[in-house]
Length: 541
Image 1 (cartoon, helix red, strand yellow):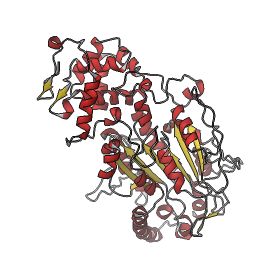
Image 2: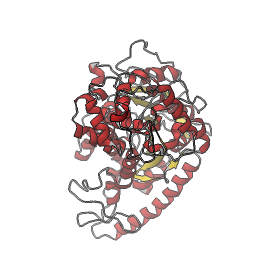
Image 3: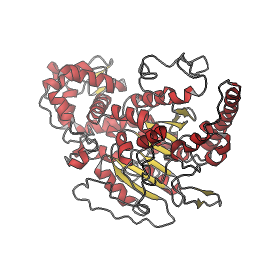
Image 4: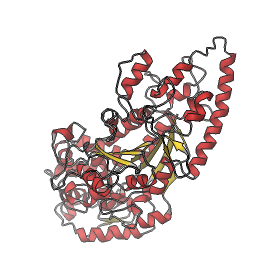
């Protein structure tokens, strides 16, 4: 029995068809292929990757994962091409604004020039304005510079990491993190020629052998780290350079506290005291996780209702790095109907949330993805004239909502955007440095944040943090309440407690480099997962 609905509220009545109707997965696959090849409207709120097959023709793709918008992401992180031009134009505007600020300060009755020493010590530099890493390298153009360090917050199959490493110079370092031990092991084998150490992979999956690094001097270095990106501040504080043995970042919060209070406890030498030069966050789920039915992400593959990105391991080491213990089966079988309705509406924008939640409760116990699809199909037409109303689109929204809750993706993204990225990325020298040190720093210390999102919730969070510094607009301005007021031109209006100079920078840690970018038609034709991708790029100020 195939039910076709003209209206997305007209659903298949389980009393007429029976809740135990057989679901033809081959027919579902065929319908999905038809919808993928059609010219219907795209729904940016749905994670359509949950049934997508990997397109191996995509650049830097392998059997594990096909990265999305790799060229745009890498050029933005490394400030190549048009991105360098946009940053230079922004720096010119900053210089003009800085000259106006300096003029106002000189006219102020309580002007004090005695903070030069404090400026030299800012962001972890030594008393001579240098960094902990004294070694310098020459690039192909013969320009001498210090090594750089970048962070790939979502390693996945290593596609983006490979693209970054191929563009880096000798002495540069790429730190890539993931909670999935299979992703870490696979990417380490793929990038073994750059691998400096695999000591920070704490939980090797069954069937994988530990990969020994084959990095050689004269190449950039790759360091995989098992961690959720929400914990990067504490995890990276312990990561050391495989060659020198020095800490890469150290405890940045502790060092900031010591600088503010004039404490000198003789801490270890830090290779990159100013922070990272760039961070990439490719959100969502990887193609390998989708294609592996045992992980429970795909509604077209029969498997257990798991959906944990960290896998099913209960190793104590992995649990200490925020590996989830909650599964999708726990939600379907133990949560009350009202909670399930809230999950589907909040994280899936599901119009039939109440009916689907009732069907899930009535179909308990649910153990496999097929069980869940049958429950959804009992109150949803298999096919519909409106793409959003059909079974495939509905399953995609439901599976997406459950996946977000299982892995706490909203909370993790909020933490990495509001706390981790501002703390770990170095601040742009042209925005906050005095003119005496600006020329030395502006070409070295520009912290770039690139966020690649696939549905509206993720994109809105990235947009709000870049614009306002906070995800919750009605959260805190300074620990209190109220929204940041802006004038007609978008500038923050200072209140009575704000200083008339420089207060905006403390409230908004980022400034956008350009408008959001979408994938090209050529890339979408090769990798359909790129269809809903949105790239936002900002600089740490």
